[in-house]
Image (tube, rainbow, N blue to C red; front, side):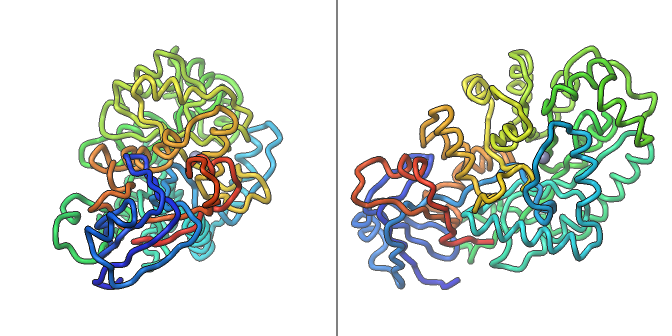
Length: 429
Ligand SMILES: [Zn+2]
């Protein structure tokens, strides 16, 4: 990246923190935004710049944030769902890449599809240490910032020992170098955003409280994630220790005496765990008011994956009730398996935003917040809000979507009504 100032020109620019302009410019220097807004005003602030890039008839956005993905499943591709989750999981286990090079190349493909869709940050579930290393070790210009949540699964002593060994192996290969406030100060050199490490106990039906407690423990001071309240079968497993997941657990020889009817739902089951540390919980398709209150009290964030939820037949997600209750809700894609075959940007966020705009009438600003800063708050905490903005000091992470300059409709609304793809403009990762 040059030390000079590059000015990107476009028909419009918008973020979800107050910038919404026509005849727009965004000035970038040393990996950061130094000014953004109406072109004449940006010129007054930073001069003519060393380089001007006219992006043409586009809306500039902050790079989008995919809060929940499984990049290492990308090589499997979209796959139909026949309504039987257990057989779907069995098929996935059969077909997922296994050898280290296949895992690494799958992750690289996921990273490429993310970047090409203007996604600059991903909360990725790494199902193995190889998967996490492939993501963190991506060369500059090919990676995606965010968090790699190392998955832990199972219950009992052996599963705990395996999870601890994986954590040590992953931590030993990592530089803990996510974007931090202390590198955001004045005079810092070119910014490169490397992803940080997090932990993900898989889900309450597959993973015991012993592993959840390991992830939540004080020495593991990293972002945490889990799948939660995704399916009715999960509710039945936790509440009654019964149903298809109980049968499946026995079938694969993983049943143990710690599995007993909890008499409460999955969110209440994890209440004490969620209160420890920062948690990003994926899905929450089945929650009641009491569950939403628990999520709010724990300051947990919810990654809603509307296309994946519809794929599995879950309807009437309560994301608007959650937002109204003060729960931070962000957007994710989940894995490529759940995306429609033929979707040109299966790891992009625009398809999810458009789904909610068209299906539920959600407005552009609310959707852009869910697809940008809400995802960063979920991964990094409230201090990360402005990283996914067009404000001075934010990392230079920009995407663009074509719009019609002759159309007076609000630019973001135009984007939600169209099917134009997003593309990357600049990515510091
Ligand atoms: Zn998932």
